[in-house]
Image (cartoon, rainbow, N blue to C red; front, top):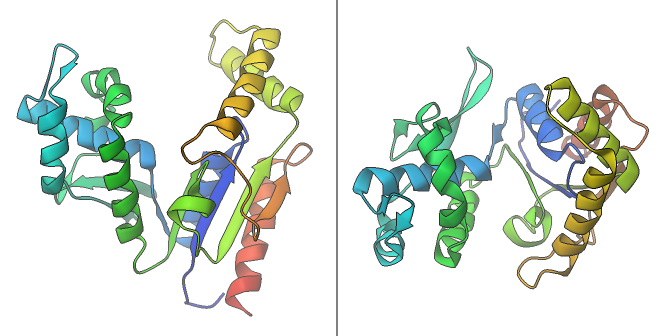
Length: 231
């Protein structure tokens, strides 16, 4: 494979395995995985430290004005073979996974100014390329110039079944029909929302993984990377 690096954008419906494929590709290619969820967690951690979130109550004005003091980057740790999140050059990978951050990240991530700033920083993280990112608007909004865009899909029934089995393996209560209903509703919401709706980029390659194993999906995606890098 050539030493040249590209930007890989992976979009698709819920419960399609986007993050699993993205992380596997990053590990195999030694690329940076841009974890948008970790970015919002890092913002939340910063706000908690500053006292802008107390007992679940946010000081929205201070959070918005404080965004200029937040810089989030990622580094690939070859020893542990995992992505590491840095907040203002500090490794916060462990701290952003703590319960207090988990409890407060959702309301922080709904602030439009926070979302705009995170998209800006996601693009900055990709200046030197060699990045993989997944979501619902990566190939259309965040990285419209990505060299490889993958749109993942699978039938709602298969996605619901995968989610059902995943929950059962964890020992959690699961109702297949309820999960199927949720998957169908999320598809509708994602596709019809006004801000950055889920849609396939015109130049995206469709990966229907209804009948594919994780290994087969990874092999397919890496083959597409090779085709691009080798012209």
